Each structure stands twice: as structure tokens, then as C-alpha cells.
Amino acid sequence: MNISHIEHIGIAVKDIEESIKHYEEVLGLKCYGIEEVKDQKVKTAFFKVGDTKIELLESTDPDGPIGKFLDKRGEGIHHIAFATKDLVNDLGELDNKGVQLIDKKPRKGAEGLNIAFLHPKSTGGVLTELCECKCNCKNIDS
Ligand code: ZN
Image (cartoon, rainbow, N blue to C red; front, side, top):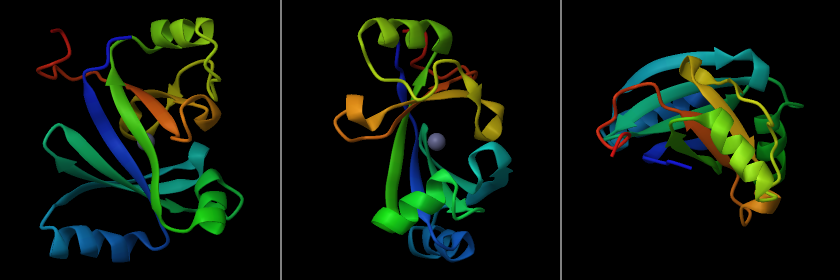
């Protein structure tokens, strides 16, 4: 494993337009991208906060993962995503350590990044995402 930083924090919201307003007008952050990820049945909005992003997640289908989460737990933090360099290698390593993986192989997430989720049963109740960071983050090679 070679985690460099928290890539983003995913937050489940009911109404993404309302939430964008909150982050822009109350916290003074700027939304720089809105994207629908069909695979995950979500619409996402991104904000940069230093090296970390805030990813707002609005459900596009009540039976999708965010739809179910909102139904069960309401709005709030949904997952934490760590930036890593070699996702395939990490998943092999985690599998060997007996960590329960939701994704055994990387798949495409928002912003075209390779991502994989670890099961909250294996991570102390925190839905954990690994995100292969393609940028030249200052920490990634250190
Ligand atoms: Zn995410």
C-alpha cells in the first residue's frame, strides 16, 4: 500500500443543487464539476479543498447505492477515498490480508479515475474507496 492523501470525501445528499449552494454560499468553496456516473446511479459535484475534494452524491435511482443509503441513514458522509498509486497491486495485497473487497478489480469512477471499494465490514464501518491518483501529487512518490 502506498497511500498519499485523502483523495475525496463522499457525501450523500438529497438535492445536489441545494447542497452546492450550501458549499458555495456558506463555506465559500467553488463547484468545479458536475458529472453523472451511470454505473453507480449517482450525480456528483466536486469541490477542491487543498489536495482533497468533497464529492457530493445525489441518487439518480432509489434502488442505487446512494438511494438506499439515504433511505436507511439519511444525508451525511457516505465514504472516504484514499489516493493510491497502484490499485491492482493494493487490491491483491488487501485480498491476501483477508480484507473483504466490494470490487476485486478496479472500475471507473467519477473523473475517469480507477477506483475500488472495500467493504465496511472489514474497515470498522467506514465505506472505504481507493482511488488511483494519476496526477503528480507532491506526496505520491515520497
Ligand atoms: Zn468517491
